[in-house]
Length: 275
Image (cartoon, rainbow, N blue to C red):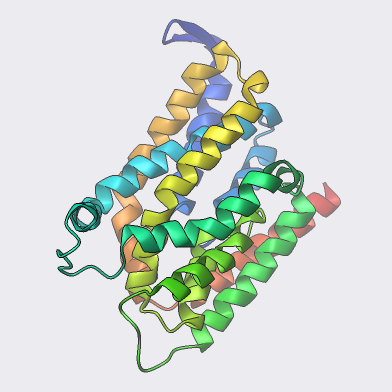
């Protein structure tokens, strides 16, 4: 059965599948649980077309960017004001120069090796990466210094950028890598999480644009309404739960996240091994 949507005819089953995937993406995007791992598992369970899920995974980043801008608009305005007037340092833990320095290592690695990194996007690598990410989050939980830094310097920004390169490995989780780097550098979790999300705006936009250019041949005109539906679904879910997710990862123990990641890792291992 097909339905008319945005002047296109689409199969209602695909419509339902993309809504489910949009919900999964929205729930996992603001938590260090690896949205990539969840998307692969759920899309396989739904028997969703691999080319469409690849394109969806790329364009969905724009929904996340919009939500991040909305959530951190006050912080972003302060950073922009400081860029225009450097004497304005009111309640700013990091500047745009720190973000640029942080982006250098991950930007270089992503720019020159993004095609090779895309080849790592398979089940076995994601399972391994989920496990390694769980280990780093466990280390983050164990490293709880009494004194925490609330301002990021340039050396720390560069080190954070280097550790962020781990997130290029599918399944590791960018947010998980950020929390890990903050624990190692004794930076307050609220500060490092804000830094991570604001830094991710140019990062996600640039990687999505490069990926779209590389995979433009996979995109069909008939896929547009499906992708729009997925993006809107993700946007709505993120707007509903993103603040609660942020409060949780900023203030609560990560034990539940670690246990959940291990459950997902085990589930994926046995599902794909015997399926």
